[in-house]
Image 1 (cartoon, rainbow, N blue to C red):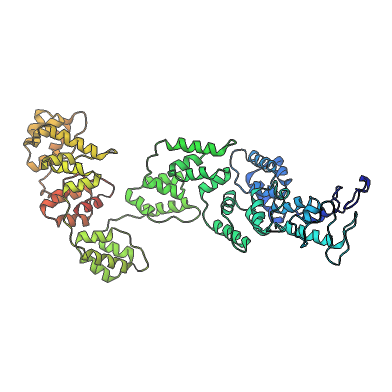
Image 2: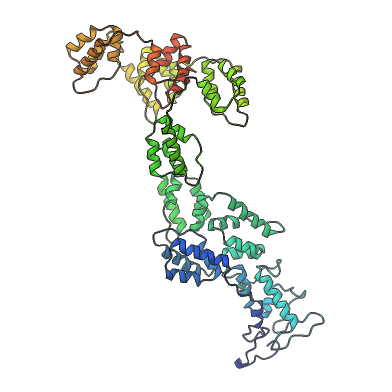
Length: 598
């Protein structure tokens, strides 16, 4: 005992005050009270076992573990075919890592000798610790401790106070670090709690969070007087935010910061490829880094169309996607133009599809009236909009109207458009260069050509990644050969389609406008002469119609709306020719032609 010889083992001293014998009395007083699992934890464990369909062996292994291991195991989602094996592996990893909570830290300190426990900071009683082998001096007015046996009341009260503080996760003296024996074997959360002197409520709340959220909470320093409140506020703020998939992935696999940063700078398709598979092996950071390098050298997938993007963003099933793709483009736009809300988004979109297909869709004859009705604009805005030229009306109506007072928004647009000076119309070369994003060298080479050669260069679609190189090759091909304008379009048509002499004669016997109708369509089939002859007979058997003007033909061929037709007719003839000399492509051809007009 203190100041005396140790008693024989048969008289084992249980006071905890002896330095020469195995005393455990004081350590038991300082040890935290045993904690049975709370009912919410038991309910959570039962739900976890039921939801994942764990077998009886895995269930028993989980229920036999301490509370901190149980919380660690159930803090992550369980994926894979054999979920029982996954949970068993988690239990083994948690047990092998010897996680000790901050509450259990009091128990580990309580197992130390009385001198280490009471005098670990050297100032627990306001005086320095006694020399080795000497009993601790009592407080003023208290009797000294006996050499062996039960401790006095003042020492029991002091030990209970120390154990209570350790149970709450506090360092007995914040100015002096805990003894190495106190923090050895603690997990990261326990170290974080002890270093910042957090209370038990914060520790429990932190352990209940997913691994990625725990990592984010603990990666920053904690400052302030009430550090427990600071950490609790961090937890609440992070729980209110949507989870970061990269942070979740990094926390689940315990990746280092370098790998996480390397993953964040990658394009989305690389991130998806890296995180799509489970990470196995001892050095998971190296495995993920190798995945990043392999995925970065692969070509990016082709961009998704609007329907695929809509399906992916709203997580719709394949049946909804097929129904949506079977609709006409304008009906697809009606279905996808609004946000999709609700738990069963596939059902919401399917109901939209049924509503759209069950009602006849009519093309409005008055786009201004439709715009006013959709946005619930007042009569003053209606009158101001109708007073504008057709092309300016289109510019005002081509953008969505948002805000509480939509009439004021549209009126401001009208004033802005009216105050701007009229822009000179773009020529065909400028439109061609802008549409295909050609460089300045190509534009200059194109402008140096005669008009008929410019038309030959621009009459075909431009495809490929380097469109400037494609157009420049066209210019070189055309300028390297003598250009001759055909004086006989019938001869060119006969030669291109390899028609016989009988078709040539029958075609030349037709009026010029009928010839144009016969030749304006492509000729397909094995016997092209028979196809063209049938066209000639069909045209000759029809009564003569009043010839259509060029604008009407252009509008009908491209299915343009009435607003575009009015804007096109308001142009001078030479500008009409520039607008109509190129093919119109794209889903919304009216918008393409309106851009040419502007």
